[in-house]
Length: 127
Image (cartoon, rainbow, N blue to C red):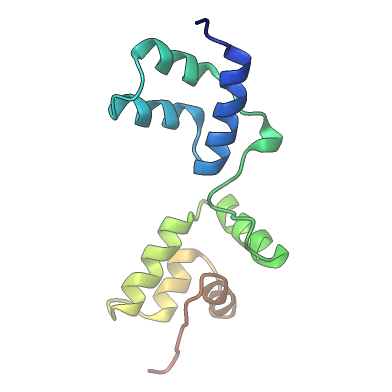
């Protein structure tokens, strides 16, 4: 049985899209789980997913157009979903104020309310 690289590449692209991971991350995960050999791991890593098929997990397709644009702006400022989430988490735990969250996210208090809405969070001033 011969190895059909084109067929394998096609199937791998579909898997990658499903798992929203890079082929390198996917290969590492498969290798660490002992599902593939080192040779297959190298081949998987060599497959490149065309740019038009890549999905940014920071910008899920489920977001509205406006929310996606706003998140994209935040990403350009270096603010990942993880970081923004952490900022809101410490705010919700009462460790910092809403003003401090705005400062940490480099936005105004008005913008913070909008960002909170995008992330399904709430900011209450004057509590």
